[in-house]
Length: 222
Image 1: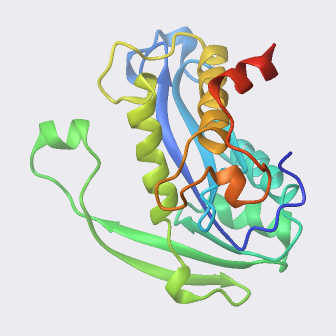
Image 2: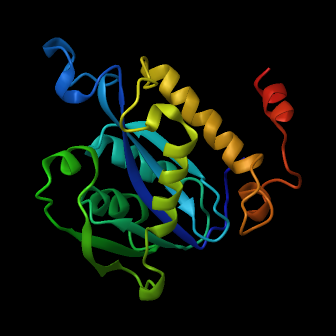
């Protein structure tokens, strides 16, 4: 259903989680093996309709980044403005996928260093400032932002116990992790009313005419 979309503003980001154990606690033979340890979910969101057109579960590496951006490129038919954080892998992936056919801006954040070791261990460093950079095309500087996708990441952490940083509800198998994310986004896109839109993201994007129910989703899976 998410093909030939007419999104105008897309924001992308990655969110960390882990499967079986955190990377530093894995057995030596499992370190570096995908499906164990640190896992990242790459997410794109339409800043206007709040639709999440695609996501990708993988590592925070060039292969996963390229697969994610190429998937995004196959879903949107018109020129749009893209915003990402300062992760350098986006530069190559976006250029190879879109060439000069989009307007691309990057938000580069500056983080401070916490003197509190316990705080640094369990929470991200405090952002002390950010710079906006035009990478290609002619993006609107006022709209270069990753605020919506970062807020969406918070929705993921609040909605799925397996994404909580300190939890015993983490995923034990990568397959279950990926299925849980797919169900979450099915519900988020089609069955959850976004407060600012007063309808689901799929309805706002013109993908669906009605608000789906849990029963509708279950029937589709059957």
